[in-house]
Image (cartoon, rainbow, N blue to C red):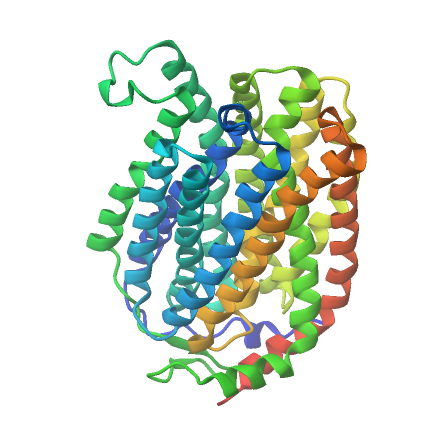
Length: 455
């Protein structure tokens, strides 16, 4: 069912800034997300070096990149997301950027596996605060039908950062492996450690950019007749609980669909470099370069395509446009995730990974916007935190660990990583497709309810 365009394309609010400045904010937040993605993704390139250096197995690495990272990102996200409904989001953005940058540097100088674990937790806390504040801030700069595109552009930073982490990371690994004479400060570090340190430093400049150029917008609420100022304080828990209870069907089906989608998507992405190294005997530099270019191009184009598709569907009156993009992507992902782990050569595997990443990236921005469009303003930080919690626990928490456990305990062979990727990829994609179909009618009802709800 589609809402009439006049309902979903609401009148323009009093602009807190010029249109050019609003898109400048998108650009700065894009860079912050890019910096975060580099700090998170570059670690996948040094997995094999970390395993060898500390003498740990796949399960320990899976927990380090998954549960340890995701649990604290989720918990911090809930607290900071709730705080974003009460305080200026700008301060949370600055603090979160400083956190993931500093702890990214600490990851490179950690002398024990325990200290490395704690450093990755610090990066996770930064991630937990950055994303809810970003989504909430953008919801006040853009109208409902524009949010999917705006957030998609910000999320492109995540995909670009992932690709650049692999491309630049592989170059840094090669550079530090050959010489350190020009960098005395890194003379006591191994190449993988120096690479992590360099990756963390730009975040300090990003925090300065956020502090000096980003303004806090007035808070706005969507209504059926326009956009009005939100209440001056966040809603109490009984009001939030009542709102969630009314929308429970949407939240349950959307949570299951999104959780399974990110479990397969993030879990697969984390292990692709190791898959290329183990299956096709590529070097870490080859895996980083090959997968980096595919991730950079496929994911960037896919995220932008998803944002544009959402805008097109919304203009045609589809109230479920943001979720509908997920449905389209999942249909195409089923054959892609069945094929890429079975390719006879690494080049063919990357060729199939290109459309896989394109499709998997299409809903990244639209799903975050979907949450914004069914909640009132002073619940959006908390709602975004719930979304980030789900992505962290299912994607970062369970995704890498599920694939690692499947490799270690189902197949019992590190060389069987390709079959673990195949099995987990198909199960999560088909499951997400089922729950997305169940979610669509419930989401349309929640969207209509959000336009008329009053506390």
